[in-house]
Length: 156
Image (cartoon, rainbow, N blue to C red):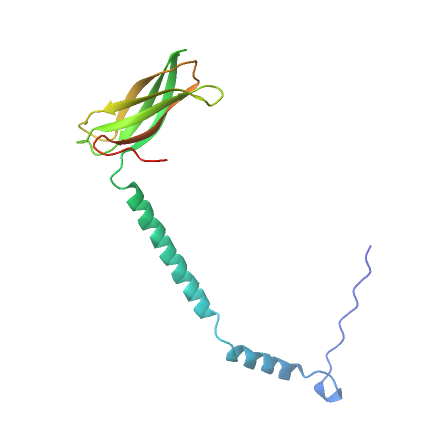
């Protein structure tokens, strides 16, 4: 068990040599009033965060605008030499798209790769199933990237 803390001393009036706490408090308040307000730094910080958020949103929209987008929705290992890849494609329905499909082995080595051309469609998004021939048994298949046929593929 711990020992009980000693009781704080009773406050003494300033007349018998003690500290005049009212005067100390008045001095602290005067110093606080003479300091620049912290409020302006909050405003500066909030404005900076808002500007950075706006820049991030604009950059993100510009990076994805006018691109073909895909969602891998599944795959089926048909045989040791073939994997069917299923994906949804969202794009300008009047334009042809090229998609690069890959199949990987259990060791995450690419064992099959092909490019498929997806013709213009009456609507977007559209679902597609395309086959990938493999050199050895694969355990997965997916879309690596898609781009419009009249443009160059994206790097990286």
